[in-house]
Amino acid sequence: MLGLKDQHRKPLYITIIAAAMLLAPSATWAVDNSYNPALPQFQVAGTEVMLYNSVRAESMGEQVREAKAALATCDEARWRKATSRIDTISMDAERQQGGAAGSFGADGETLDEDAIDDYSRALQAQWKQACAKQTAQTTGTSFSANAGISIGQFYAPRMGFLGLENPGTLIQRIGVVSVEEDARATGGNIEGSVHFSQHRLLGSNGLWFAGGYQRTTSNIRYGMNTFDPNGDTLLIPGPNGGASGFSLVTAGGLNVVNNLVYEADYEWQSVFAKGGLPFDCGEWDFMPFAGVAYTETEYMSRFQGSVPGFGRNFAYNTSLYVDTFSPFVGFAASRDLGNGISINGGGLVTHDFNDIEGTDRLSFTGAADSQANLNGDDTSMGGRAWGGVTFGTKQSPLKISLGLSYTYTDNIPVVNRDGTNASAVSLDSGEALLGNINFRLRF
Image: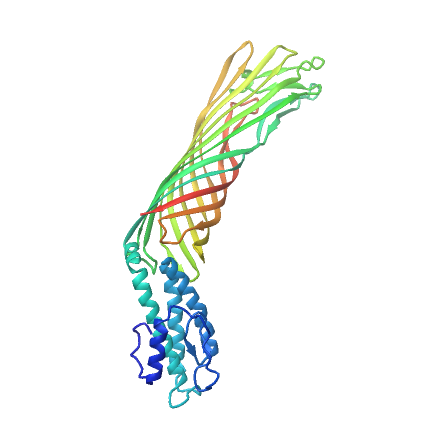
């Protein structure tokens, strides 16, 4: 069993059969021992190995198939998993020695164990010849560089503008023209990582560290032909509250607003660093990680319209900047499907510390611009989940991944105008759904 047990003595004819088996590259015809019930009757699929135990032969056939697939791509993790299970099958035969399977003075369990071990040694010789050098190159410290692009939809929070006042009751409603648009978002990222496989902690397969940069943008364009106050007074709240705003009475419908347009540009730039512990969990590779990120959010918007009945135009111009420091924790998982294809997924949660500053300015025909300085700070939560498929084995120098990610954030800046007080800034939630393609180069 791969050097774990002493060799058992065996009849000469078994030795001859094993030697022939090792020299044979693959089974091209099925061995038929039906003429002699005393010989092993169950062939291991894909080999010339014959066993006395049918269940054992079937199990070994599955692992031989896995081992050969791993050998074809020099996939060390898959190789270790398959050969380890072959060892387990051999150990099962050893535990059951002395049972009723023997014949002609030889115990069938012992012969099964010897045949399995002989084939294991043949597999190990093939691995050493084909993959040992490549495997040695992947041990120790390895480096990777990753670059990707993404495109999808950004779902922005609601923005409210203008107001109405009933001329009889003087009841005011602010934010009666609302904009809640989704828009295309595009992004790109670069990342570098290092894996110290020789430094194992808590049973992991080493230590992993990464750092990178990410930039995402989204542009919103929204227009409507007219807004009719329907007999109410039109209110245009000012950034400094009170007299910095304007009210236009209906005067028979003269305060109808035309050519309303809302434009907004978002930009997020982020740098991050993280570290994780990769674990081999059977069919899955699993890695918990933690890190920190610093993000700069820039929001530029313009909301404008004209009131031809009064010969007036107006425009709100807003500029906001949010600096965010975000500790985060998360996990990544992957599963090898064979043939150089694997699936992956993961998620993370952030705790965001936000600092906000900017300006809100109103321009109105015939009056000087009024402007308010905005600032504030707040904490919020966010998160991201992703999944996809990767093409390339663990040892491949280049891998290509296609995936989909969902991001939730609660720190999108929103300006609030109530017509009485100065403009104030708060944070609201936004979502993004992005498809992405990534290229990873391994050194």
